[in-house]
Length: 295
Ligand SMILES: NC(=O)c1ccc[n+]([C@@H]2O[C@H](COP(=O)([O-])OP(=O)(O)OC[C@H]3O[C@@H](n4cnc5c(N)ncnc54)[C@H](O)[C@@H]3O)[C@@H](O)[C@H]2O)c1
Image (cartoon, rainbow, N blue to C red):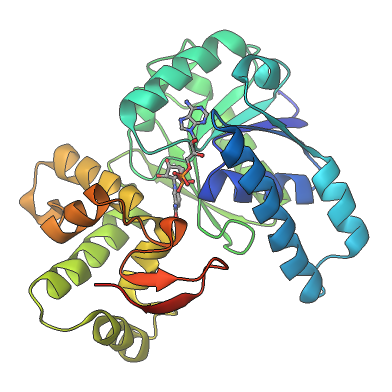
């Protein structure tokens, strides 16, 4: 069995920086790769701020911070970063073609024993595996946002993922102090098949002006004991990510109940993507706190 020491994380956005942080916190050496140098720089700043939060909560010490940061190297070239990796976790944009291209490249560049995992929220892992010559070593490793805080990893078994690969990913999830839960590979798996229609319905309710942004979120927080309202959660996930996942569900099941609300489509086309652009259903301050309703 392939021992896992060196990890590469591809994509340094909302999820990639959290995944890199989490592996480095648990002693792994991580190469964090992004085509954008700006994204890599922002990712390291975010990791630093998030470790400071853990220090303030007395979960980590300042010494831990030095060690964690020293285990992460950043790279804008895929070739240099992945040739020695035992596990690659892909966390680039939720775009099927982009991910398929990347899996083709990874299959050529990585050693044969390397496991290729995707953090995709909804795209077929079986389809990504079909772009490689190692279908038994391709798996979904679906972390939740924010990665350093959330316990769940949905481990997605593609059609030809081997038992050994499933077992290795489950073991490594436990090393990260997470709880792995197995699911089979169908659009949206379990988490997003249930969550996204809920968020979309909240956006439809706003679009039809059944209630305002704060009213919808307050009803779901106080009435259903959700820690965050659905519109704020959509902002937090990224409205572009939500739209991509709904499109995968809509196409994958061919059922109109998954059709994305036109308001969501408009907001994404206008560039209002939620927390990452400081505007979605709410405005956000640069330190990502909501500062008023935007819709
Ligand atoms: N945002 C969430 O809450 C969430 C939760 C779970 C899973 N996911 C999934 O995680 C993945 C990443 O989502 P995100 O929210 O972090 O996206 P994001 O838009 O914040 O970041 C994506 C990053 O990928 C980079 N990138 C794009 N193409 C690349 C390539 N070919 N090589 C290297 N880097 C590339 C971009 O420059 C960007 O920095 C998606 O598949 C998404 O569905 C997201």
